[in-house]
Length: 357
Ligand SMILES: [Zn+2]
Image (cartoon, rainbow, N blue to C red; front, side, top):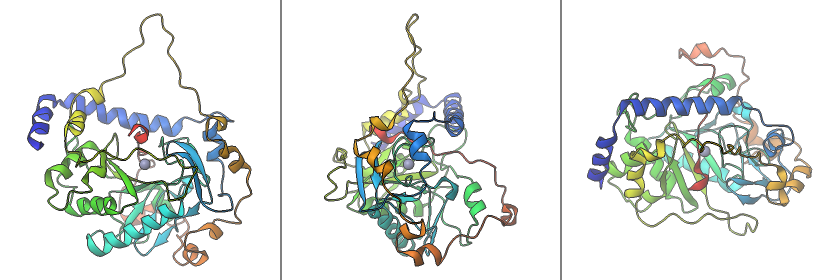
């Protein structure tokens, strides 16, 4: 299969195409970052909520259309993780998701030569649509993890805002892994994440999936959980199943059997997924997608927005107040320059479109 992918790949290698893709994704990220939702839209309303609702944790709706109650926060720091981009207030999730992230961080450090996780966006305090970055992450069962290992130093809040993403892709080449950045420890981390029964999907860039298909020599039972998707070249996205008994949670169809190293992967190496959308026929009005309103979400979501808040972030931190405080992140006063790294003002926002998968 690898051979066939390689053939398809060769026939479509075009540096100009690669350049267009790279520029397109970055431009899209910046646009998404800057576009403000209109007041009254679900994005604006869920995005301004600061605390989760009280009560038991429950997801409502689907990964890309829903909300949640009773979210808990991943502590900003643990022995084997640091939460990133704290200003976004998106380290909230279903307790099952937070527990999984902590477990993955411990297991990866113990068994996979991966010192710890840098955890990106999970969800907003009550879930719901976000005004930038994601189609999904709405019910507390999705989380982004960086493909950069946790540094041994404790990052300041400011460094967590500005530490740049590192792409696994080779610059100027079409969907090719950069061998100077990729490592076997990353492969082990991905397969560790896929090994947990509650994990249903892991979204990675098609080039990463191909690399795994071509090089993973261990047990391939869970390789099919790795799903090729746009973006996801500097982070991967973990999606867990609806927790048992979560009646309001709409499950996603299970992934098809097999390792996924087949024509569904080869398709990503054709022109089709990267082609510009066809211009509308002359005389037809372009259809603007309507903004999602709270009334478009499951009925429960309006009540969840109105429900009383937990007392504080501390009170709703997974593991209790001691977890919230024992290793709490330092204030942002320390200048980023002390790390000796060039830190840009704005890193690319992960662009993921996993809703159809
Ligand atoms: Zn994601």
